[in-house]
Length: 404
Image 1 (cartoon, helix red, strand yellow):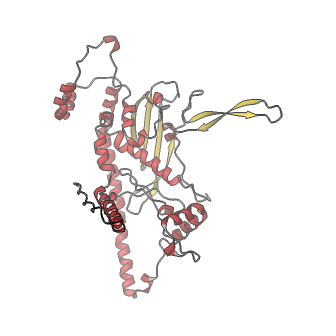
Image 2 (spheres, rainbow, N blue to C red; image 1 turned 90 degrees about the vertical axis):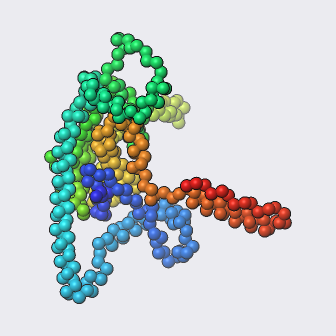
């Protein structure tokens, strides 16, 4: 169902539908086949040597990418060699496929409308959540009981380990759930990696994260803040746009994202840092300190998304596609994971399901198999060593098989 972000130079890949996460398209340089160079024998060229050649010759990689890109979709001549009656049937199948593509596009449009329909039903629940988080209202007794019933399995252990509750001082009564969204974001792995220690004081003023669909395919993320010492924005938004045309399977094609400008207060911009450097005058030998503002890592860089390369760009940065993919993925994670199940991220319960979803069993090999191979190699080496020695040492017994 999903397609990766479109490479605007090769025009091959497209981004996923709004309800799915994108596929990762590996760059050609990481999986390129060895080029046929006359001066290099293929049998003598191992992977390390090939990787070294690619690393030292970016123009070679660019040339290969361009060559392969020009070959995509080019006919091999087989279809043209078929009898006319067969070619006519092939053309007929293409006509049938076009009808299928139309239905796929209708399906995706209906899925989007269904998402919007249920989003309208979710919205009152999100609004109630925001009121409870920010201390505007308290949950009903029925809602509390439903939540406690959800944790019934762990209730006995919690009661046994629970320390004695201290009576609350009315003057120290806590309002709502402090740092709710910051805690939830720090439990979501992809977001946690972006949050720095410098960001946390500003993110403590985050009181709500919500989203809305656009009139055309796309969505907007809305971050709401209380008054703070870092910026004057009450809300900071980021909008993800899709192209007008549909993808190969009828999917909506991601185009670009735009973020609001953050109105930073003086000397409070978290996306930059000031570096000091001493300079010495060659003639007078006097020194001076020069301060320079440089970009730095920050969660708030999320609102300044990378721009996709255009057809006029002569070179594409080697990490631009990864940055675009990551930026889109973060938006999807917030839309599809964080907002719908914020309380599960706050408590950490969502992590156990995240681990199951994020790993594909087919991508990994059993460690036992690798260990057995290593043990087998070790035994072969020991056997060779015994044969070379005086034969006085008994052969080592086979290692026990570990349970899988």
